[in-house]
Every structure is written in structure tokens, then in C-alpha cells.
Image (cartoon, rainbow, N blue to C red; front, side, top):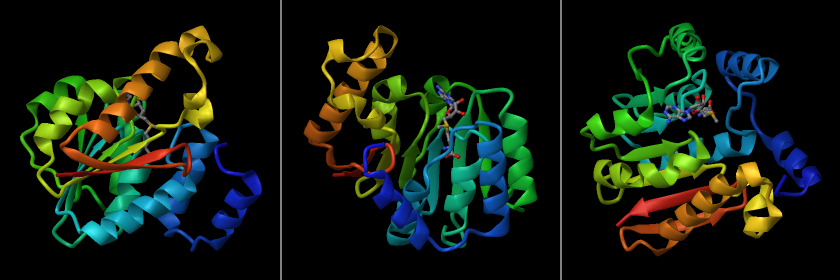
Length: 213
Ligand SMILES: C[S@@+](CC[C@H](N)C(=O)[O-])C[C@H]1O[C@@H](n2cnc3c(N)ncnc32)[C@H](O)[C@@H]1O
């Protein structure tokens, strides 16, 4: 937890109730240990979508479709979402959830490894939400740059790794070292590339908001 727990609880208490279908899918995700965006990250995403009014959204990491559905609720009428997932067990659940929410016409699920799929996409996408394997973000960056037009927004989740990002290489367990160093490299790139203006927010598990210049 990056932010004080009591403060987080208070912020959650301010949230408006979700639509019944979204509330139900969130409950199911929690019960089956599927990782989904945190409440405050969902609120940020909704606000950013309302601000930017994107017509084409791309999500990397659908899981069972919770965040795609959350974004679809605030999308402009003619907006669409393309989301990518490679975990076979989650793909049919995501499809079923899009059907339950009557969003099959709005959300397209692409099955497979984002490393391959991103290369085949043509774009442009005016809003990209990155929420897949943390160690891969840095490898996705060249395709993200190609797919995001000027003025487009990239939001990346879980960038502060519950605060572990602060630790030195030797302060993290051996099995987390690669992800730790790749995420540090990703953050450095986003902050220093001339193609982006980026803000790193200690919200949820850490989120970056980058605008393509
Ligand atoms: C944190 S979950 C996504 C949660 C979802 N965005 C939500 O909030 O409802 C990350 C998902 O990314 C998927 N994933 C990880 N690496 C991937 C890759 N290279 N290609 C496609 N999917 C990937 C995982 O299988 C997992 O379901």
C-alpha cells in the first residue's frame, strides 16, 4: 500500500455506487483472485476518459474484462475499445462478461500475446491503457509510440509495485529483480523521452499518465 490505508478507505467511501453489472463482475473477480484495477484507479480512468473523449481505446491486459467495461460506460457514443489477453482461462470469461453487459459491439477482445498482437495493430488509438505483465511494458513501448498519435494518452498501471520500486536492486527479492529494473527503466524512459510529457501518480499501485507530444 503506497497511500495510508485510512486515507484510501476514506477515498473509497466517497465513491458513487457502480452499475450493477460492474459491481457483480468486480465481486466475481475478487472471489476468484483475478487481479483488477483498484477502486481509485478505476475512478481516475473514468475521469480521464471523460476528459479526453477518445474514439478508439486500446487496453493491454483484459483479464476478465472489468476495466474495459468500466471504461466503456463513459466512452463517447461512437467510441470503441480493443483489449488484449493471453491467459486462456480468462478469455472466455471476458467474452461472457462483455455479452452480459451488452457491450460485444463496443469491446473487441484480441486473444494472444500482446508482444505479437501490438506489432500487427495499425491504430491510431487515442487512449491506451497498459495493464499487463509489468516486466514487459518497456518492450511494448516502441509499438505504443507507433500506435499513439500526438495528443493521445497512455495510462500505465502498477508502476510503483507497492512501493518496492524505491528499493535498491539488492533490496528486492531475487525473483523480482528483473521486473524491478525493467519498471525503473520504463519510468525513466517515460519521464525523459521527448515524445512524452509524463506524470507519475502514487495512486493505487502507482499510475503514470503520459501525453504524446
Ligand atoms: C492486472 S490484469 C488486467 C486487469 C484488467 N485490466 C482489469 O483491471 O480488469 C493483467 C492481465 O494481463 C494479462 N497479460 C499479461 N501479459 C500479457 C501479454 N504479454 N499479452 C496479453 N496479455 C497479457 C494477464 O494474463 C492478466 O490477465
